Length: 348
Image (tube, rainbow, N blue to C red; front, side, top):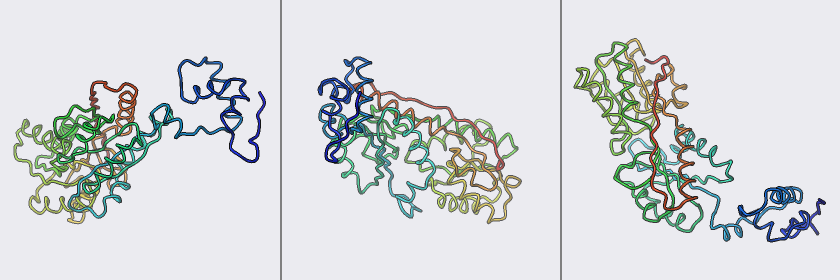
């Protein structure tokens, strides 16, 4: 096979690939578009010719044939909350979102599918829907679970393949991937009791999302079953600053707390600052357990004992489920629940 340089500095064409491979232009087109009818040896010859000539397929033209964009949107939908300084700053600094992006990208890359990250808040949903309706992506990985978010139902009504990062707050026939939130909170309560803590409290996540309410319910129900029915709680917002503010309020109202479950590592990092500013020693005076096992747990001093949710694996599973929906439209919704584990470090 002879490689022919592009004439006059022009980009190589499909005709040049066909000539180099000794096949028809139609055969080259079928290989580029992934047609299963092409013989494996012919496919290999054509792919070698594409590499040798430096031919780059026209993605726009290819999408007209396959009706696929080979792109998936990661839509991060968050409401406005107290303590927010900047929505975009929070999106790109929260370790959780980075872990989701890494896990999803790792699953999609071998399939030559690109990930388009779209942060959106309550003021921007109409732009997102318009973008998705125009067919720029083949499906959506949606990070959203707050009760008032219309996006899960809007995606369902649009008929675009979508997978949600957690159990939907409202009943919806949609695929989702989640962790057993209640079990994670019970593991935290069990560990704190095992350390001898008896005056326990918690900083919950936002209670308008299932993960926030489930972690609070799991923690309280386990302790109630062990004879501790009164567990003070303050609602947080999954931010570092929110965790610090909540810890100050909680410890001011209940200075005798000796065990604290914080429903995210980022909030726990802020809570530890407040605890130490108030002169409490961790874990001697107050044991602290977080939730996530993110990089924030390792930024804490002391290092944070936490509940691990395997976010990268969960995001990869979201991508796999989404690709299955894209390949077979009409497939029934699927839910996958991962199991959390306790990671013991220095704070409890």
